[in-house]
Image (cartoon, rainbow, N blue to C red; front, side, top):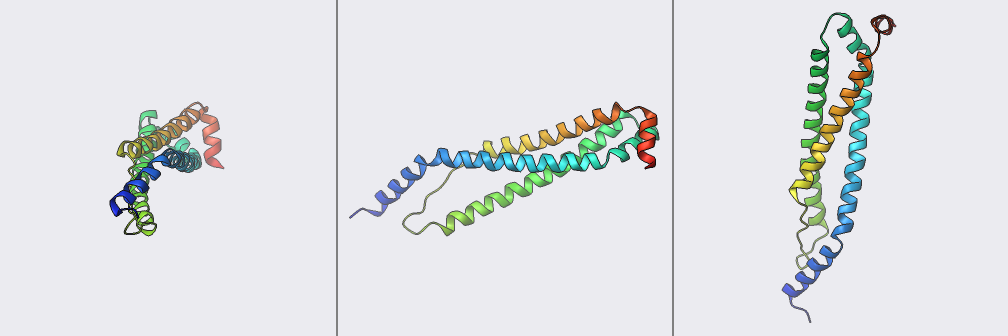
Length: 151
């Protein structure tokens, strides 16, 4: 016969033994989410290449074009990151509640700085994608931009 407190400690110890595997899955999920977000940003900015070319043809400064693209992608990344954090925490809470019984309830602690690290990484990659596309468009000669716009 095992006391309830001792059973909880044993269960907690067992879960802590498997926590490195949980972190691996957390990193894998973050990598997939970052790849999906980065792909979305690249597609979004790539589709706007003609729009950026039009703005530049009409006399918009490089700084203005870059600032608007960066602000838009930063806003989208910020909103997506906040939504992902809120939904992720709620889903993890519901999952732990569904798979816990009265005797075997345990707390799985994921440090908050990991959430922030992944969040900042996603926003930073979105900014990088925007910057790379802007550099590509900026390097195009004006006649080629006009031809792209007229298509």
